[in-house]
Length: 198
Image (spheres, rainbow, N blue to C red):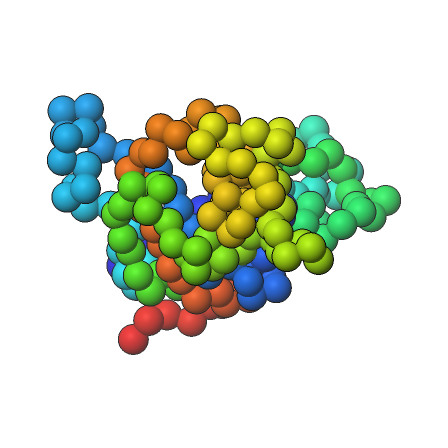
């Protein structure tokens, strides 16, 4: 079991905070020589891992000239998913630079599966935190109206395909890569204060 960072976009942070996101899929990276065995190569995530969530954030404007790593844990960090930034905040920083002390969400991994991307079920797509619309359809995250092999109006799986395409490129859904499907419990706490598996 290990602690490691994981990055999410602002819409997915809002889904984590709302309790509607309990799953994520990440590319299953394997050496080229083992690509034909990808389905049987152990993934980098394991049941019992704790993942501390990185998200886009701002520090106080007085810290704009320096790296986030130089900022003390006692300083406040504002998160992009929370809406309009207060006046005291500085530039928006990518989540990849968020220091561990600024994280507010810890994910406890409960299940890990290796599968092809398009094997996602309707329930899995919903567990990914996609947003239903009042019409009964689901949101288009790619805002393109077009993802190869998927057509609007979007059901849950189609909506997830647009989410995947918005992150990995418009052709990435059709490529149907191997992914690691990670299920988790969300704890609204920094990883230093989060509970540990027994």
